[in-house]
Image 1 (tube, rainbow, N blue to C red):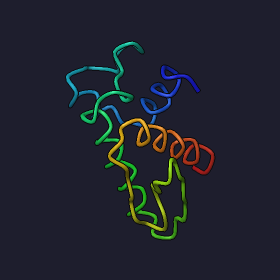
Image 2: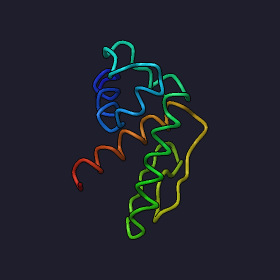
Image 3: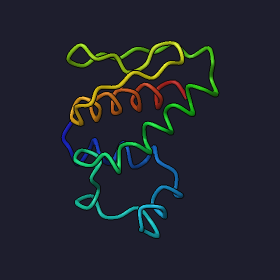
Image 4: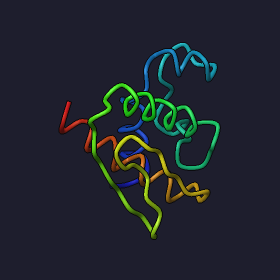
Length: 100
């Protein structure tokens, strides 16, 4: 999946409130979406995913990228590498879209 497509996938996952908090009245054009380069953009995604995990105690999901686990039975594990984190978020959202 290319960066623009991946960013669009994450953008759909985020609520309208996210865009307002980022200073946009609506989702901006694709080339202004910076999930792949900015922790300021990714951290709210991580928080939304953690809220989902917290609300669904029985969820058991696990993704691994370069030996870093992201989710496992309600706990959030994350790497400090933004590229790996970005790719793990994409994998989670794909799983989420297939299962919800």
